[in-house]
Length: 403
Ligand code: F3S
Image (cartoon, rainbow, N blue to C red; front, side):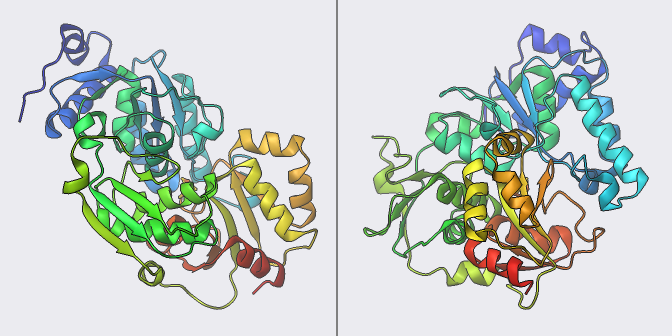
């Protein structure tokens, strides 16, 4: 393994020339780079910081963020933030404890004061964070990492939340893993010989692939009669494979072609998936009436909100129903009248947070119906709730029937 070489400027930052926060940040970025076998640090054009929900990191997380930002006037690169623990406009109606609300706002204030954009979404690329092909990022949100590497032509590792913030402070990340050509070749060729009817099925396929490929790079080939996947199909698949495994990059026939050459065809493992049953078994699907029906993991686009509105077709929901999205996408949907239709059906537009980032148990939910395999995979362990995973169409019917 090569030694990590820091430049003179990086050594100065490490020695405290720019203050205690940047020194701590450089120490963290260098330590991760060294542990991962990086030979040097490289500049990044963007950081995306996750792990900022007060429900998950509490007062210790807030202290860490304040400490590492000490002495930071302005983050040197564009920095966006993942969902937090609540819809900032719903703090009162959700009845969360004052300590929680104030702690969450303090986290966002600390990051915003340093220049981070509080997009509070896991789909920053849908909320105006334009990414140029070939750009190097330090993103910490597994679904966004998988999307950026696979569909946006960027390069980023699956960095942890603290590392992403440290990289945002020093504008650097270690050159290792998915930043290097040799680690971006397919390791598995997956023949998905199963018909996938909608994004929920693509999510199940993603769960199977992630569990099988681990931190590998799958190249997915679909059945010959499979219609071309939509953006939602691929995003649900990406998010799920990044949840059940540690996939940070995939290729998909027709949508994200694998690199030519490199000799990977002979070396890659060949896998055939002809059923979604294994993935369904990973979700421990519950039965009965959900007390929450939630759409938007990853956060809904305007098109996805339109589709939910179309499926509702003016009917009112009986179950509490969330459509989770970013403020930017909500603004666009508002302008197009989509939110009016959803609200008229009794749907709550939830921004800034999601089912995994919000304290569902404190909010009194026990059983959640979801069309997202990623959310269904995480919710039982992260939020202590039972899940019912089904298609968006079936979730809408459950919301309308209330059972
Ligand atoms: Fe996004 Fe939350 Fe799902 S961060 S990908 S909506 S678990």
